[in-house]
Image (cartoon, rainbow, N blue to C red; front, top):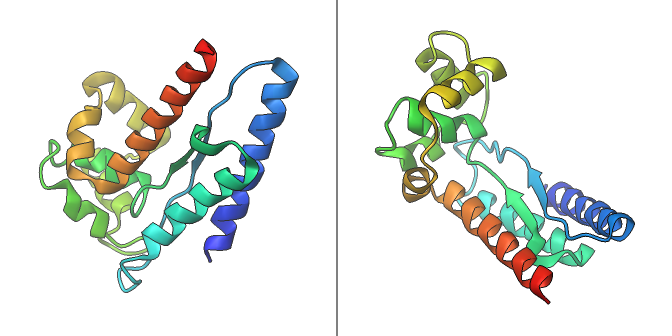
Length: 164
């Protein structure tokens, strides 16, 4: 199953390198995929998907400028950390079911916390009103911390390349 993630990262990395050549610039590629995963799945499933994305970016030659964005189980859990938990006890949200049909799914819980509307517009409106504390989210959610660290590494690489 991780081959899909590897190929996506590889192809996105290749596209980013083409963009760099065409525009004589430096690019960062962010590949977003929900990890989904059933609660019964092995604990190493998320790590295997993360590593697959990382190795796909390496294969493309993009290296550290390829950023896996792999929420566990879904991106809704990251926002739910802020909306419902005020960034407290968020690691438990990473154990929510990845199946949207589950009554305990992150999507269902976010919809409830946002008053029944978890549309993109409703999420953006919430973020515009309350903001998002990236540092506090990273402390409580390992998948968000990995994304944040990877993005920071990509930005550092761009800065290094632009100064040389």
